Length: 177
Image 1 (cartoon, rainbow, N blue to C red):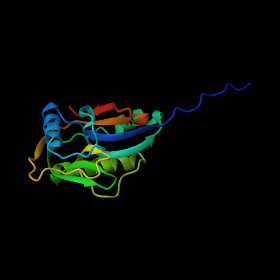
Image 2: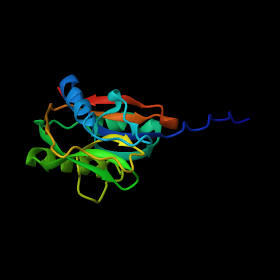
Image 3: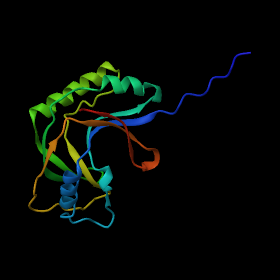
Image 4: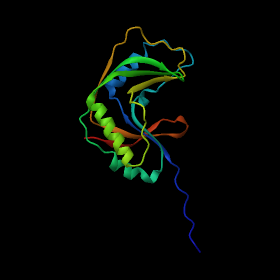
């Protein structure tokens, strides 16, 4: 009699991200405090502030070892200057980078190539590095004068799982020195 196999594990929702250090996180929170927020706004929890580099979507758990190996790319790091506040469609309040250095753009492109080699989807739109400050922020008003948040990005990045039910994020792998 055949032995029943166990059902496959549920896929995990993954993305690659840059996580701010304490100093950058404090600057982002100070910036967010300068906005005029409607009562409906749901600020991003400080520990969840990040820049998404690539969104991978739902991926089978058994592919994690392959991803850890295939997405480990050395790079130099770079600088992001987050200086453009905006409220995007859907009421998402963000602080965007007005310009992205060529080193970051090249690294983003190399990661896209690595994702394709792993047969994972890659966004077709240009990368717009940003930090989400709040959701449900329809009618939010950014400050008239913006003090840019300068982020010296170290050559480290994370593969992160988005936990079901909006319970937060959990690092799956860390890449870099």
